Length: 274
Image 1 (cartoon, one colour):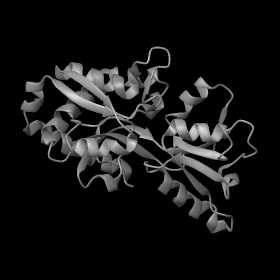
Image 2 (cartoon, one colour):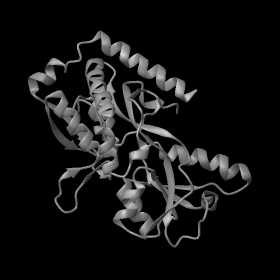
Image 3 (cartoon, helix red, strand yellow):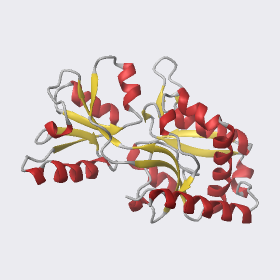
Image 4 (tube, one colour):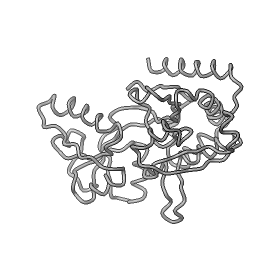
């Protein structure tokens, strides 16, 4: 069923794209720039390089390549994760590519072009006694409050802890992934949840500090988020992303950040089912 939704979504994109000129909206052409905003605390998707303080990451590289093909430049700004959607709705951002998951609850005012597989994953300090995810029942588990992860932790807890007579996971909110990892290192929480795409980088940066527990406990997609009334911009970006997938430049960027296995075979419109 999921594979069918992929093909239907992509067919819809191709149909619409064929009917349009594939050009940037006039306002962006006149401005000569794309205004994009990110939450730069989500390495390796977007973060400040600790040695240069430059904004870097997988999403940054993807957007830069898209902008080059679109014949425009990007003016980047930064905002807390909770402000990403408002920045799009108020037109402070032309679109959002910043580690944001495609969720059905977010589609009332936005469309997503999905470009990366993701999933929430438990992790602990290396010395933790937890050997499986169910060992975290009744424990304090932190994650970023403004993401979809709190609801997914609650759902997992009901199915795997409470349904089996074990105590529920105690959710502890954090402001961002850096805050959550700090809480873990300070023993204020027993475990944490982040997107599976971020953990290899965290483990590389602090070798021997963290250990993942189990597999990602749901599957989803990160997407480039557009206002629903910006179909022309959405379609021209989709066309160029599809070309990047076809010519291998998309996969090369993912491989650079150790996420080649998270690639999608084609851009997908609103493909996530949750």
